[in-house]
Amino acid sequence: MEAIKWVANRMPASEDSQLSIMGLENVEKAERFHRSFPQYSVTPLARLSMMAKELGVSEIFVKDESYRFGLNAFKVLGGSFAMAKYIASRTNSDISMMTYDYLTSEKLKEDFGQATFFTATDGNHGRGVAWAANKLGQKAVVHMPKGSAQTRFFNIQKEGAQVTIEDMNYDDCVRLAAKEAGETQNGVIVQDTAWDGYEDIPSWIMQGYGTMAREAANQLSEMNVQRPTHIFVQAGVGSLAGAVVGYFTNLYRDNPPKMVIIEASAADCLYKGALAGDGKPRIVEGDLQTIMAGLACGEPNTLSWDILRNHASAFISCPDWVSALGMRMLSSPLKGDQRVISGESGAVGMGVLAAITGGDTYKELRDLIGLDSNSRVLMFSTEGDTDPEQYKNVVWGGKYPTDK
Image (cartoon, rainbow, N blue to C red; front, side):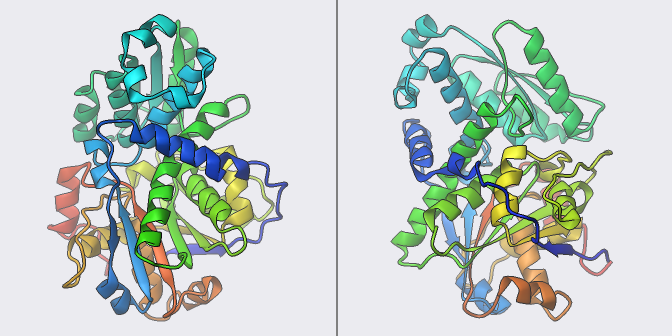
């Protein structure tokens, strides 16, 4: 069985200039925007007290994004807010004016007209962009990498987007979407990865993800729970991880939680950057084949990377069995705990927690991050069963076992 790899963050600190992206005021504006949608509701925060006792920690909390806007994943938060911020910038308006009612009105057509939003996706981000474009009377073009699930393809297509599965990996799909956007009148690339000259929209997407983090913080407060001691968050390009780490670092400036970043081993660009230790990001090339399709990204978001190099405690690279373990554990909770239907990219945090608390194999990592019986762990199940067939193969069929 392939082992989990990990590295402590010993990278030199930068000037930390990107942390302000996830400032509390910016995230509050994003949440206010999302609350204007009639489809909005706060997603559940599952408190897995019996699981925590089983794994030897004080508390486990799992934010369940399978309920988000009826789309079975969190990604719509970023795409929709970025689209609103873009429209606000083009119409010289404040984001506070970009309510759902305005964005779906005839007045918007007069003020802004119509744009075509291009994106690359394994499924969840593209579905969110397509859904938002459909609701707001805009156009969407979505490119998916080879090996993408047909279910995810059809879910995007149902939202009225033009969608293709390309014979290339995710990062090359990003380049294709950017090229086509540049060649299209009123074409806009909406991607959660940043590069030189393309930073505004990725920062807005990260702020949109902040709604999820802010909800979780408020829910913990309503439960009379002190701040989490540990936050486990998964990463593809790192935008979600940077958003979560950035928000909670700003929220708990004097005493931030230990931040643990988790990747698929087939696309562990952040882990490789941390392993190199010089503060420079690294790129992973190739097909990036993993069941964690939402994490199959080999080129990091430079904005998020700057946040993570300054505020993450450890970076973890996980083979597929770790995610499968997490999926099974969340789907079959101990008596008294809430069930969480979590997909391949959503459940990896639970799999990591179970692996590093079970025995002494990862004792050094456990000691490094100070995980013990007093720990309160927060994690984010970012998707439900977005590929139902794969979900059944793992949870019912036992695919990707821990003993092989």
